[in-house]
Length: 207
Image (cartoon, one colour):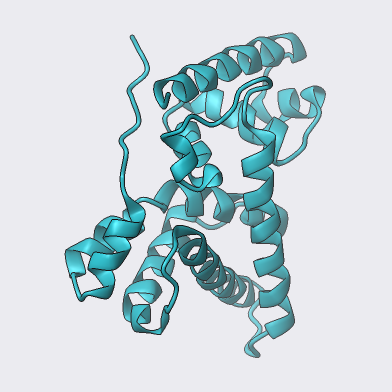
């Protein structure tokens, strides 16, 4: 079964529609970042909350806040929009941490730390997952690479996606990945090689 070709959305056109007051335009725009924000949320939950929350719930809450406060966003580019969404996600995560540990006071320092860590995770996604020797296609280069890579990861089979996240984004060694996935080290290395091959195929589909 072949790999499906990624679509070619135009986020800045959707952003213009949303700014012109199009509710459907804003909904379509935010949907472009569901996998991206979900991946960033998952990485933070593993570090701070032992994945006791559902990343999809955090992303949905982030989207609700983005809808509610979109009038306060003054940027015009995808990069600016991503920074704004990461800040909302950081606040949402901080509130979840506060509820998890049953504290009442808002922790601005934690929100700043989370925002910085989300930025770092986004950079790691951008830099750490592109297959060696590959380069963004002309079409993909018009999008933020971290978003494109999150979308590609989301299209991998679950075990392929898991090995790539653990190895490249959580920075685990192959023995650690094997322990987390309940597999042998040898099987994890083979799984990782196949996952990398599918990422190359997806990247080629963007050419």
